[in-house]
Length: 153
Figure 1 (cartoon, rainbow, N blue to C red):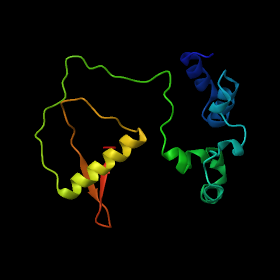
Figure 2 (cartoon, rainbow, N blue to C red):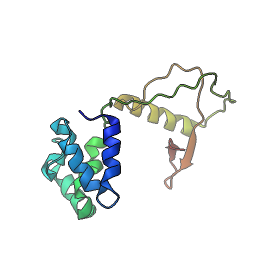
Figure 3 (cartoon, rainbow, N blue to C red):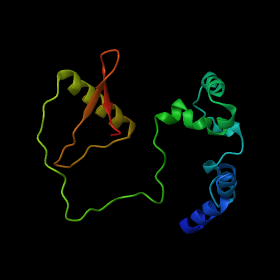
Figure 4 (cartoon, rainbow, N blue to C red):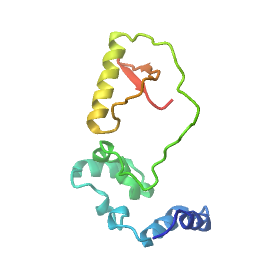
């Protein structure tokens, strides 16, 4: 099995012009389980994916990117990737989360936030926290009058 330093060395040796195809070959030749790379487009489709959706994706996505069609899958959209051997955790000694003033939400904001939290807890994307601190939330109004919770600011 390759160490992370060997992987980075291989990536540096690949060069900019051939990076995608060479890295694909590199990872194929590593001691990885077969499920971690694709030999053909047929392997990209999840068994749950509808053939009509695959055909639609192939029409919309340029042919140069067909090797990445699985990234556009509606089935994969509902799942998180598996945990890797290198899950990151940042320890910040001596620092505490800031204490902010609690502010009230409108009924629409509260309903939107509850719906977002329950949907993502159910999917396993988030989990209940035991922290005594909260986090500010930001909403953007949609054209239809609904609210969109911003989670990437």
